[in-house]
Length: 237
Image 1 (cartoon, one colour):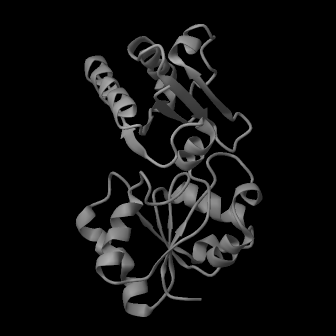
Image 2 (cartoon, helix red, strand yellow):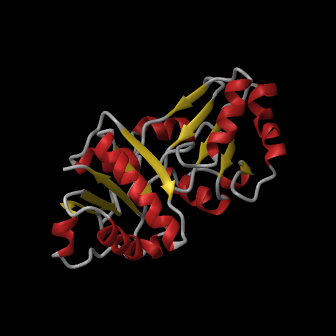
């Protein structure tokens, strides 16, 4: 197999691997012995879901998350850089290096002129844009919004203004246990004719994707999205 840093998407929840990942990904994964992962435990579980015959104890894992000493991550690439061995990057959910600490090791790989190969897999952000009915040619992912109520409301107003003025879809996320609070803030803060799409549990059994104006959301019962990973999108009417 070609020596490269393979970016390996994972499922977005308890969805079957066969449902969302192509068979080619399996063929790549089973050949790799060195993985850079956000969480070793979940990475092991994912690899076993890909192929039960994978001998987990023969693999080497390098953890990369918010607790990692970033001065050391360049060393993670030594098997690829010095020995020509293929390596994989695995995130907690979805695509590595997109709103994910894996981006830092990919940046180093590019600077070292190492080959980087992104594999096909589910991206909640892209799939949310696809299903929203909003502008798919100009959109921006804004990550987490501020937690403090005043700062969060101010940021929402800023993003809403961009959606209307620049004709640009605005995406953001929230910790799943605060989803309903985010929903309440959006409904109380945005213009009544601004459109809000909530895309939760994408590809999973609890999938919920719905677009309404703020005025329409106010007339509806709150969506059942508590503790379900969700993308929030706002756009002009």
